[in-house]
Length: 183
Length: 365
Image 1 (cartoon, one colour):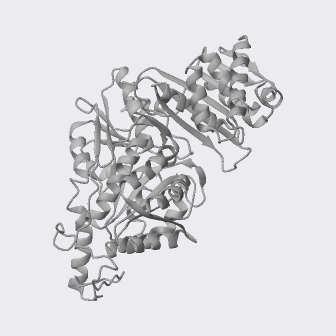
Image 2 (cartoon, chains in turn purple, orange):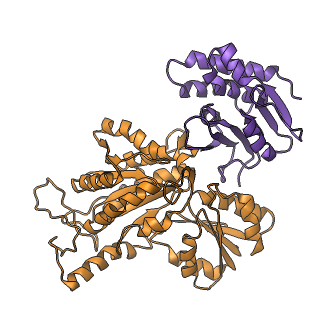
Image 3 (cartoon, each protein chain N blue to C red):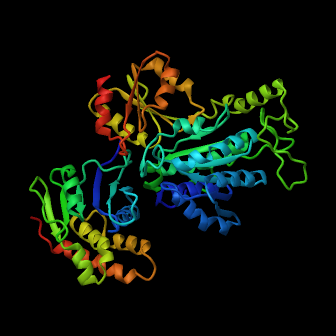
């Protein structure tokens, strides 16, 4: 039978790097010796349009590959929050980009707001690494994979020459995640 | 087995093709199959192979046939609109008995449809897309690992029977990334082409262009010497032999997986990405005390009607969930032939069928 499933959905707009983030998270899980499946849904545009990545992590077999009731939902646009909040598992964790998501209706979930994109732009220096900042935040809050393994997965996936930028982004995200109290 | 790694379905197809000895790819990139062309453009030259992006899908199918006739394992990869364009030349491969592998990653159709979204609407096209009776084998993977295994198998079948083999994937299976451990190189049988002196029944030996023989390849009906003929008895003999190559091997081409069928009262018959939904739904139904099971089809054509007929004897009902309006459903009804109820479940809105929607269907029968 399928082992205990942990599900994450990363949702926002095309171009925010969420599919890459999903792949890295799944790769980190495999590096950590666990089973993982990553799927995605995106529009025909390369930028803009809705985009979502899904990751299922388990120690057993993963039969159905898509997310049904995520333990964690990351939203990087208001539209993604509106569309996917309802499916979040009761008691689940919502991580919202503080500057891009204004409105989070109250509900039976933990909400953490982090200025993910602003951290990427102002602290790290490039908005394009917001996805790596987001990964850091998610892993700091959930500990779903060890930080060191996540860093290894990030380094293996990012383009050569951008390692330092991405390492900085990951560490900024981890720090922001740890520094944020859940509401 | 290889070290565990996260791999995409399309990537597994590339690895399987290279393991099978692929040396020629001609194609025209199209979502959701593009990664196959992209990766082979990089990998094939490194193993002494050739990658060509042709002017369109018609030309790429023709090039694949040409390369195969010259003696190398060849394939192309496409999706709905491109698959439609390849059909004429798939028929040419069938009548000229040219081994080739055509990957069709299904997306929502008809026409341009929804390019980035999954569907299973090409099951009948894969069987009957080209005109005239003809032989074809269609394999449908349901996981990343199986995409690898069935790609290797597709080349083996294509060569051994001298037929076009369609690997019928779908956007979910092709774009999904899973943890896989690939079998060791050489672990899966690669098959070989019938050659003069060693050819199986119904399959003529193959001599390649450039080997010194005189070769005539024609899409016209031809006699065993290869020359065109209008003699009715020769025409009849050719078509019956072509189709018989596959029909007479229905049992060895039966690739099914049985899940919880021993005591099942209701069985799901599923394939491709939807089999993943179905397995979960069967397990959920079992947790609630239902006696559900699944027969998963990994080879759709030739259709395993003997398996379906035997299953229909045992169960009260068969449920066929598909991301189309009922293509395998009709085949199941035909094979079940009234022995049990057959119920279709269809979703054509571009979303993969969810387990929760299938459970009530299983429980309602």
